[in-house]
Image (tube, rainbow, N blue to C red):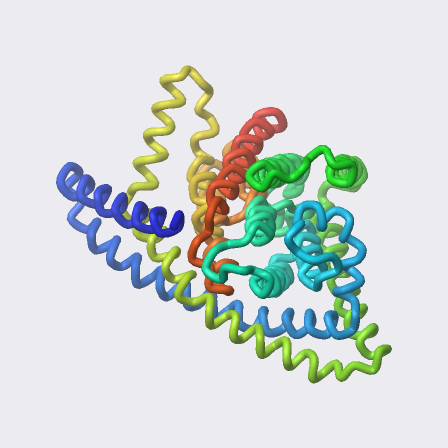
Length: 410
């Protein structure tokens, strides 16, 4: 239901903004831009789904090998003490636990292409346990919000864009992004835990959260001692090595157990193709609404209004140039990336706005895209409070990014 109202809201706001542009500003092309955006967004949604087909086929094939070789169940047992407490409706040692862990781990390493298929596999397994196939279950919502919060230890893609745009030290946003994305993930997790009445003072949950905080702090300390100009290179190499090692582990274990590795891969790849086809209508729907919202000028109205509001409050408004990235981030990953690049191009990669836009880009993930892809893959129509908690994580991550940006760069 929530997505239904959001979708209608995007379309109606786009129409109202278009009318204001036409009648007040005399922009006679605005309605053409809105209509054209629907075709462009529909095409983009199909192309994204088409692009996902190969990646999904590859990684769900690899996952099937890991599943039959027993690696996924081994991961399930490893994370069971913590995950059984935050996913109490999933049976202990269920394969979904291993896939959830691997998805979270891949996201933390910035391996988006590997994380999405693992996540979709986990969603399918949670849907098998779901008593109401049209309504998101508690485990689905917890899992989705952990994804939308976008905890990333190695923001390689942002550092690459900064390097391409001439940043003197492309990795100077590493620590700010790590702190901001940790705040986003913690906020999203706490919001869902409160909704689901999870005992946050359980010694395993509390110990895991404290351990994660120590891990983040230790990683910050170790990586801050590396040569800064080589940080993105080291991060990329480490991530790739871990990913390749995982593939070899899956294949090696399956071969050792005398599993037909090739047949397992083919069976998983077939599932990946079916998942990619099922995503298409959900993805096109959300991208068309977002495209209309942008093309109508509603985004520009919102940014201008916020700038005036913050100025009226007497706050420093130097961060306003990075707001397009912040407002676009929950809506469209490619759109936010474009806004980040535009901010660095306009203000300079090493400017306050350029660095802040980069930090915002890495602080959280694309909530509505993830909602459309993950819930769409299993046919969920009632998302319950998933959007609310996802947006809480987004807002906290963006606010944290702005405050940390002032602390580091202003």
